Length: 168
Image 1 (tube, helix red, strand yellow):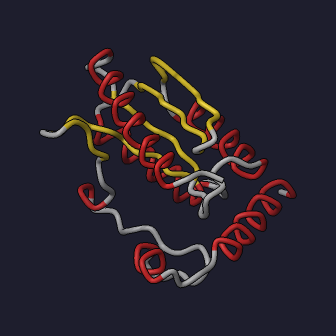
Image 2 (cartoon, one colour; image 1 turned 90 degrees about the vertical axis):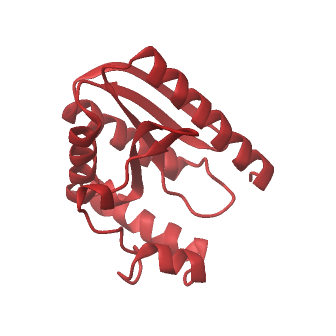
Image 3 (cartoon, helix red, strand yellow; image 1 turned 45 degrees about the vertical axis):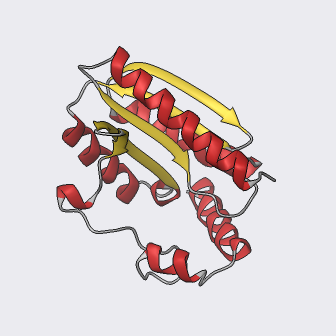
């Protein structure tokens, strides 16, 4: 279990890491991978299994210039500098998230510089719809805000998806 303070510190560290990689590799696009895991436990056998599949999918879909993977208590993180412009990388990332059987469980952000540091390139900037809830199909942001589903329900659905993927 992680605390809110640990989670916030990990976000700050991730943003600093992203800024550093963008400075080191200005000609590539920065793809950041995390697993979308609800609740206070961000590292588990399930999250590591999902991350492993995601890393394989990223490696198969992008020409990678630089790669760093981190298995942390605050969650799995992957940083990939890829040979693409950010918009093209985001299109590929969204395609992976939407077409891979486990893609909905990943967060593949393409990070770009911003006035106050870094920011993810949003799906909406490229005309893609927002993500939908794993349980009910409504826009995920509404379910998250309303806490419409428990972490246990969501993790159960994630396990079902991983089990189905492993059977196929």
